Length: 306
Length: 290
Image (cartoon, rainbow over all chains, first blue to last red):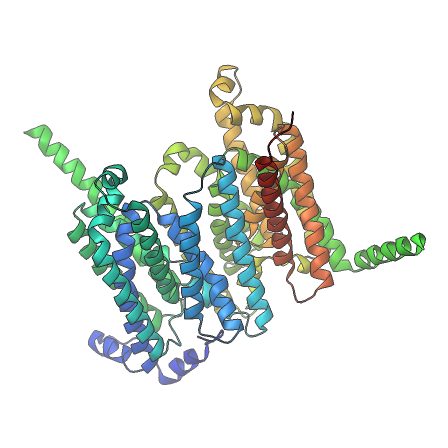
């Protein structure tokens, strides 16, 4: 994805992409352009992968590791653009490297807690600064930085969709193989390791999968807003149910709904995809929190009455 | 020969400060770095580095909201960061409990910032397309003389306030239970400090940008804590390291125009921190001879 793919917006206004009252017609027109079909396909792949891996991440309380990994993707994408490669490969390379690095650092503790926070903050900031340097050196359209940080669904090519699909397929396959020991190790690491589950190896593999998921989500939401697809659908599902399979399914449905509606609305509105996706996902999360509170209050009232 | 070198160096400094934009940058940068060094030391000491991360999202959304409503972006910056800083303090330990909740809220605030960015860059005829970039990554070389003066005065006020409350704040940070038994107003101090963190974040946004302000808060403070265990010495050192990072970064950016100033400042700050971290580790491995 070259920095500065703003041209298709012009094409849209020429084609008269205004919203009509005919919903079916509006939805049909979404599929009129090749880039929009690509965006919807990519969004679908990304939403499913991010929701499933995000579900495990929220169970393991690693949502900030996910955020850090995604932030690291920004210099990767900017650097890839600078040397003329697709930003997608930059995301993949840097996110997976960050995941491996985090898993090794996390096991070599021994410093004061506050010092560790300072190191994490400094490294994260330095990587963002590096991304900014790459974008300034690129001398292209400086506005392209916004699509790397906050997402852009224009200009996803067919071959990128294929890459996203194959990586997601591989990652979900690996997750399927390790899902039982991973869940065991996440819920009770001590008992799991006593029962012979290779806890460290499983958590390393999971962080690499998380790196891949963060890289894929960055393609739609940008490096700074991956919370929208990676964390919020999964957190919403966990507010509604604690059961793994049902929770995973709810997270996938929510992720798909957020992505599809976000893409559709962003197509017809002047406002960017990053705003719509975060707002929709956050609204779903707030609704789930309120719903769970209401449910708790009702059941308490029923219990008191009985 | 020595005098030739010296006069060359003096000429270079005079040439450097002869440029008005550099003079403004050095003026504001020095005061902002000093404030960040002082505030950052307590931020690291109190394990509140995450607050700095959270405030960077608010700074972005606040500044762009002000711009899209046609107000001075600094108004949105200061109101947003100070209000949210104090708000996070009133949430207390409950606010730190669930990182999913906090992370989701701040991701949404960032999403709102993107909305305001689009409103500002598309609907206003005066809209500056690079406004988002300069808020995210700073534009210290673009400060006017008046802006630099205001930034300097506010930064000095923040620094002074931290120095004034340093003694009770240190007590409250290191041992809150004993401090409150000795009638130190621990809660009020904590809230006041977070207000100062908010003001400092708004200041730092003007220098290195919303996304990079955490580096200016965390790196000098981390460096100082590695070098000395004595609190007041560490506080002064943190301030000095921050100012040194800022000067070195600005000079580096002037010498190599391809490198943006905020990148240089953060690169120097991170580099100094990493070198000191490595050096203290090596020294600790060497067995102590008595």
